[in-house]
Length: 563
Image 1 (cartoon, rainbow, N blue to C red):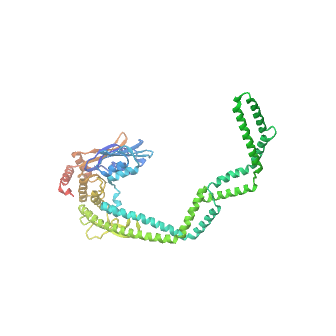
Image 2 (cartoon, one colour):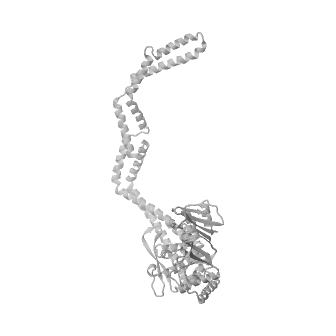
């Protein structure tokens, strides 16, 4: 549960740190003092939307840190998944600069905002001022029913969704095949042309490179022959290189008779003469037998042009073109067998649809069972909240098509008074009735969600008198199961707090600041007088406030708080 909240340079809050404990903590203060600002800051620490405009004027950033005492295996598993060392406390921190840059961390380790939100979902349930309106959304009855169903509902829904994914894949596959069927003749004609075009080319891997080399040779044939003629003349002509090497060899042979150490020199020159003589023969043979056909150059260029054209159409290399050919042949075979494939796909889809229908019916049956029990449990609590004749029902109709959440169209029907028919919630419920219904739902679901900390931001909007008293009792009931933090403007609710924190706006040195003060017994009486009587601070008002506190303590210590 939440141990402390530290807010720094956030809107009107310069620096505020609040420690929390189990039970029921209430925040009160005059309108505009910053009560909701505190909840907004807490929400940002939990991954909520943050804006640079929330940075306190004259500062470069704000930060909010929430510290939790966790004994939850789910939190430990998530810490392990993120490679963060587990500790007795969990620190969630968010920093946002005036430039709009956001930084999130868990136990001092930077994490993406999505990870911060995953931790928050396991720790806190915030019921803000707009949350009552969520009851009017079409998804609300399904959300509450599935949450109420717990693990079993999760498993049944999971099995349905897994089959739904198969259904969507099978339906998409059939749709593609049917689209191909409508265009089959055109596709077959195109594929036949492409297969013939590539097949007639008779492409060989490596051919392009060989043709490039041959084209290079043909383009430079004149230069080659001219160079070889000159080289041959320099070797073979009178007094040419061969003749001079022969003369050199003879001179060295004569010298060897007098100095045998020249034998190696003689062998080198003799080898050079033999090599030169052999090269001369090869040059003569190359020149006499080489026939550079001018027509061949045309053939080579035409072949290269064909390869380039095919590569522009089908792939960037010979291998890619041949791969396209193989793929085209495979597609051609598939299209030629398309009728059978469509029939098989229809059969597969029919089988999956039947299985999905069965799972959808099972999901609907479980939801109806859970919805009935949820409504009865909620009715018990709304009866306690000054609606003794209140009735709630979740109506089911079947959607025409499957969806990821099933085939159930669900609607909340409500009646607050005896003799009045059940009607859609949004049509008949007042703001105060929505608040009480939301609180009743939270009361029922708190033991299922696994979340230990609940925050209520002015859930008492639109209620007063006896209803406020009953709502306070219900909040105290929830607080026995975990931790409740409530921002309220009603003295009846504030009196039930185990801890009472007053939020006040004050101006010092031409700057407005929001301050927080934990009230003692005397301070609580004074604050309750302000909330109930305003400026009419009389002895009777003080006695009434003290009486409220005494009655609240008596109720909290009674057996009525036991589930």
